[in-house]
Structures are given as C-alpha cells and as structure tokens.
Length: 462
Image 1 (cartoon, rainbow, N blue to C red):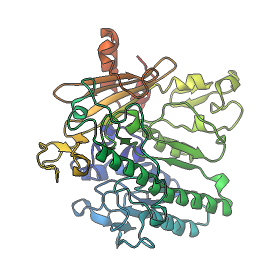
Image 2: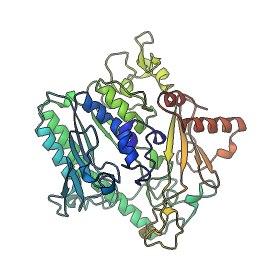
Image 3: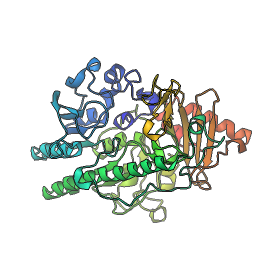
C-alpha cells in the first residue's frame, strides 16, 4: 500500500514490512514519503480527496501520533486503526476516534466504508474535481462475510492448480520445505473454507462498487470519472503445501486484478503490458492532468489505457499508423505500442521477511518464524530471513521470474512461465554463466535504483 501511495519501490519509500520499526506508518514514513503521496499532490492542485478504510497496519498506534494523525493530502479521513477487521474496530474520523462493535446492521466495515463514501458524495457539488480511495480490508483474514452472504458458494473449493498441495522439493527455498507436506485433508478443508469466505466477503464489496457507480451515473458524473479496481496483494490457497497467505514470489501471491473504466477507456479491452503497484500513483496524477514527480519509480499507464485518437497506443499494434504523432514519458517517445512496450520489460519484486519470538499455539516452532497458525498445522508462512528480490521479466522473447534470497543459502529460483506457468521447476541451474551474471547484475542495480533510473533499467531484458 505504501508503494501504491508513493509510486515508489520498497527500497525507496522505506516501508519494508508491517512493523513500526519497518516504517509501517512509522516516524520516518510520516516525516518523508507520507508527505509526497499522490493524494498530497492532488490536494495541492485543487482536488477534494477522500480516504476510507485500511491504511497501513500500524496506523493509529499512540507512539506514532495515534488516531489524531491525519496523513497529508486527505480532506476527508476515515482511517482504520491497525490491521484488517470486519467488526470491533476503531476508526479515525478526521482525527476523532469512533468505536464500532459487532452489530451486522451497523458495524460491518465494508458497509461503513460505503456509507462514509456516500456522505462525501452527497456533500459534493462536483464543481471541483475529486478523488476517492475506498480501501476495504475484504477479502483479508479473518474472512468474515456479511450474514446475508454467509451461505453462498457452499459447494466451491479452492482451485486445484497443478501446484496445489504438492511437496516442495529441493528446487524451492527452505521456507517451503519446512513443516508438513502435503497438507492433510482436515487442513485442506480449512483452506477450502477460507476460499469460500473470501469470496463471500467480496460480495459486499461488489454491492459497494455497484452503488457508487450507480450514484455517479445518477448525478451525471460517471462519464467524467475514472473508476479503478485493484488489490494490494495476491493470495495462495494450498499451493506448494502452504495453507493461506501471500508472502511468496509466485504468481498466486504477486498477481492482482487491475480494471479501469472512464473517459476514453475502450470497453472490454485487455492489454498485455507488465504493470505494478508503483504505476498507480503516476497514472492517477497523469489522468488528473498533473505533473509526475521525478522521484516516482513507476510510469503512467494513461497512454495505454486511454484512446484519445486513432493513433493512441491503447489501440492494437496493427491499427496504429506509424507516422502519427508520438507519445512521451520522460525522455522517451513512442509512436506505437511495440515501442512503448520496450519501456517496460522488467519489474522488481521486493519482500522483507518478518519473524516472531513466539508463535502462539506453535511454541515448539523456533524463533524468527512467522504466520505459524495452529489451525493450519503450524505451517509457517514467513520468517525473518524470507527476504528476497526478484526480476519479473515480460517481453516478446521472455516470460521469466528470477529471484534471490537474502539467507544463509543465498538461494535462487528461476522459472520460464511460458513453459512452466505453475512454477513447478526451478531452472536456475540451467542458466549459462553469462546470462546468470547479467540477471544478478540487473537485479542488483534495480535494488538500488531511484526514479528515472528505475525506468531506464525496466527497459532491459536478459
């Protein structure tokens, strides 16, 4: 979420994990990156801004400003204290605490976010441009659906992918090789139950999205408004005998939806272009007609998601006259989608592992492990040295993931996703010395890039 707000990679905004010491709403975050989010820029340039829901996991702690703290740039602030809840939580309503209980008719958090959004919209004259961020915890644990949806999807099971509940062999890093594998049937039943409840929580999100869109249509604002739907993480459900979580570099964990509708966005268009959460902030600013700060590591997606004329690069490659005017991002100019795509062929994936001294209910697990849930056979999902960086490369000739762990093994993994979409076979040992060296060098350079240097490096593919 810090990357969404800032348009920066983790190594630049500094929020490395969900702890205060890891700058999850910590002092350094508040004194630096938080003052430079896209919201701060939009507010400064005349936008009315609204936020409701989950912010950063440590938000609201008394030693970092408590609920009185309102991040810069938000005119309306409805921030959730702490991590994901559906009931029994506290909100900061523009700096004033508001406690909620467990009454489904008035406390279910997704519906509160919806209600507050309508409070904002009903007081809007629409004479000034506005930005709303509805940050619902659903479908995060504890996977609590609204009662009216608690019986939906009773027959569904988590997808049985080729990687589902298989033993992670020596080709996978050590964290996947620990603990029971494959998972026993009683744990698989819990994985299926989590899958169903996650979907059920999203039905209330569907209601919220539909209501907001219908309201904008009623007020004749929908055709003037961009609506973006996305998530801050993916999720595995039984893949490689890991029960339920999101801290691995595989496609289940790092792929997220990205849907957009709005002015000049073609209907039903699917664009095969590698994008990341660092692209959201520059895209929002560009769509608003604002300048993109040089410190942002991402790029604007406006040129590929909008069709302002027949020469737009949102049109298929074959439909673009090469002699039409060029599009530009920074120092780059593009006359067609193929050339534009050459700007972005490599993305950086970063994760800093977290550990605990004691995992409650799994006391026999050594310190430094995390996400060890007794309900899931104490299968640990993270550790203090589950820290890695990856290159996710997509081009005409490559569809690759290359990762390196910062652990005692200095473990590496590589997958050709065209041949191995479920990432079953680690092929790093098949690399030639020359290609292996180039991948390591590119990864090392991307781990320390900033701003335009990140954009430069993203155009490389090995």
